[in-house]
Image (cartoon, rainbow over all chains, first blue to last red; front, side, top):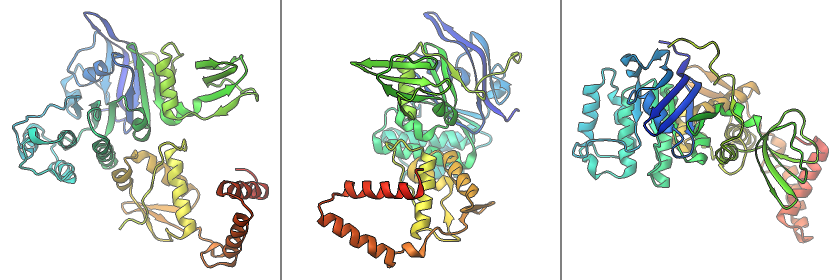
Length: 298
Length: 130
């Protein structure tokens, strides 16, 4: 097992009957990161997560989890996948659900699972079908972390939760990651919440990678500039808008910015929104995210 | 018992790790944190604020680099020395003088924002912009 890269994709693609859902994706995610997977609906996020969970097979390219190709069933022994609908047996009690986790997973950690359930004051004898959305998410997290995964893959983990349950869920996720060092990859539309939780980002549009790397490197690569100027060269323009005489642009500076521009540091949400609005913006991948050539054979 | 609880302002535009660094320093200045206190673990911070544990550790590394705290393996991160200045304490003459000045400024018609602007401008003049 290779401990450096939790995920390495090379030329990864998936074609359904209606066309390519994911195409030419090459990127990597270092172990220990908490990675947000962002993109519009239909961008290929769920397809990518399903490939990582071995629920679907890639049409092209290769995908490795901790160095093991997903063509090998062993690759997912130490990964846990939580789909958006969080499938649980509604007629099982919480206790029976945890027992199922224990029976099915050789490395099961009952202490961790009970701690997560206990922190939500969920009675162990309650049937899963009677729980609130937040409580069901907590039980699903208990199952996922009880497996003691090296990689936890979450598809929209907080989409259907109210703000309070969302905060509690996020807090549990971050706290459990602190001890275990688990690599987390989660898709989400909640850009504000991603900003707090994620230190790594992968942005997909139309099945292709648009942005990938450490947040600490991606953010400082951008500036938000406002002014009456018209010349944005030589900077790389991600998105620009002109209203009356005023131009506002999100750029990747190439050299000094002319003093006539008012310059601000964008927050993560500014950057993500700009890329989501401008799908044709030039791709940015940091050195860490880029898979070195020549390609490693699958 | 926890010595300090961080409050993260999502709208401020200040990086989360810097907010933690600033809040620890502020607590050190005010004597809320003193030498020997243990900072909350990354897990404890995550439980209350849902902040990425790597972010908390990054803030603590910065504080360590500045010589303010020290990690002790297996036990946590501890405050090495306080930043409290006795001359700025609650009952100090300097503080009393500033209180008098604010009272006079208020009487002269200055609002809170005006006072802050004067204060910022003068401290910038004296210490330089940061």
